[in-house]
Length: 168
Image (cartoon, rainbow, N blue to C red; front, side, top):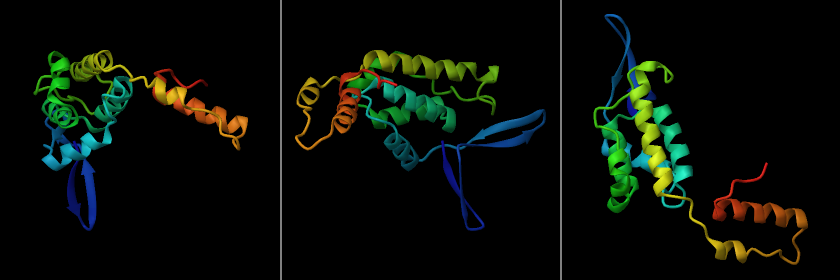
């Protein structure tokens, strides 16, 4: 996760520090404060609205910030109700799971990546996109609205409330 450090008037935000070890570079993790966890939880979308959207953002978040298994649990505890966490409890990563190599695609990170994939797959299954047919049904063309403007607006409403992907 990101921690802040003052250096000559600049603030450095880093999830981990790469240091030279006896046999090459090593990652040194910095633990998150409660404030860090709160900030990270706010960055993620509402899981109840769409597990798919949450999973996409969460995967990108994990790739960029490399939270440990314990930090993932803390973030989800801030983001989700206890009853929602219970739905995916068996897919929560072990507290000791962490990135092992600075390159995401390195084989040493397979345990970490698989833990994130297993968790996000469970989230997508347990939290399907919420469909709001009332909002879709009430989307009508306004008297002064052009056809193009209406099509753009109704496409946004359908994408947001139907669970259907936006057409390309």
